[in-house]
Amino acid sequence: MSALSRDQIRTMMAEVLASQGKEMPAEDTANLEQLGFRSLDFSELALRVEDETGEELNFDAPGLRQIQTVADVLDFLEQLQAA
Image (tube, rainbow, N blue to C red; front, side, top):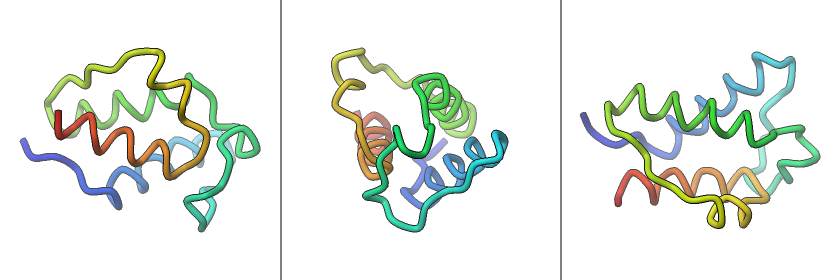
């Protein structure tokens, strides 16, 4: 299956947040800590991307530590799909 677009990943991220009663910010510069988007939420999002694409995402913990904003999450998942 083909890679997901940035907008599709953003929509999935909004769904993960909505399931916890949180709202996706309009700005991609929003800080994840302030949103309450935790590593468990990232894992759920990554699993959704894997399910949708049929491809396993291979990533390491050091790369995750650099993620601080919504844009960082989107960039990271886009890059993983391209790898």
